[in-house]
Length: 105
Image (cartoon, rainbow, N blue to C red; front, top):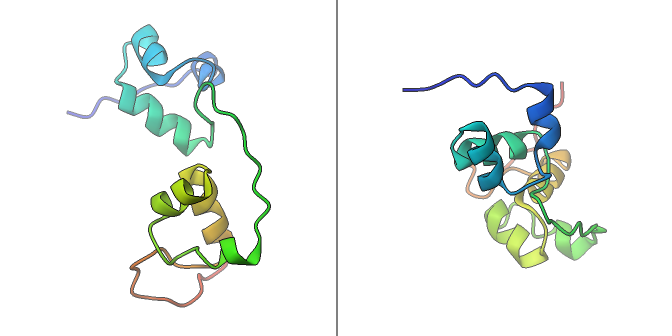
């Protein structure tokens, strides 16, 4: 059964400052729960070496041609980075039937 977690400011401020497993053990959570929350908030994992990617045409051309996960691995960046840049450029996810541009509200 689903258990609602009340994320405190202290808990949120500690995301990414230790491994997800350590965090999960500290607060009695599942590691996957911590990973999902950290990813939703755009927080890199503990020990992550930030690699800033300057998107060149050949890299942008990859977006939407394969899964975001595979493209991220190929470029050496996070899944979140690829997904964010693909959506910002209005490029549908790989395999999405509607290959048109996203509507901007």
